[in-house]
Length: 132
Image (cartoon, rainbow, N blue to C red; front, top):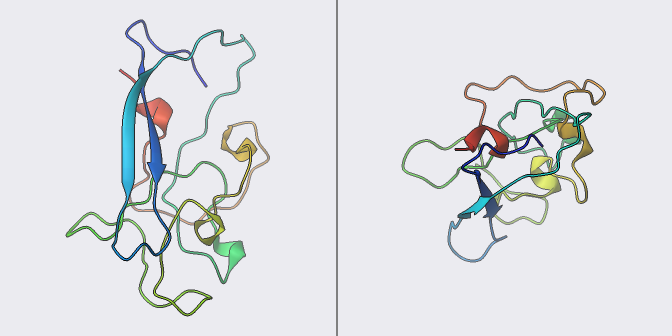
């Protein structure tokens, strides 16, 4: 990641519980500071909106993905109509159902091997784009 400006950055942690009974999504913002960036630091690619891809992994967005917004009166960015593999209503989360793999997200860098992605109407900013 790029080094933060002198005032620091605002970072965020996001979480969506799987079928907790309510449509909940959580985000906590906090002040952070990225330091000791090497001159050879890898640039981050531009985040795209994730899509539901549980049954069709080839449709998962590759590379950096933005946050998921759902169950809002307006401004949702993911279609969750229908049911998921377990027969319950779709419950999006930061998991394989929306293309987020466990472990280091090595495909977020601009020098990563190019991957096909689905077009999106409104790409979401990466956490690096939300620095102050």
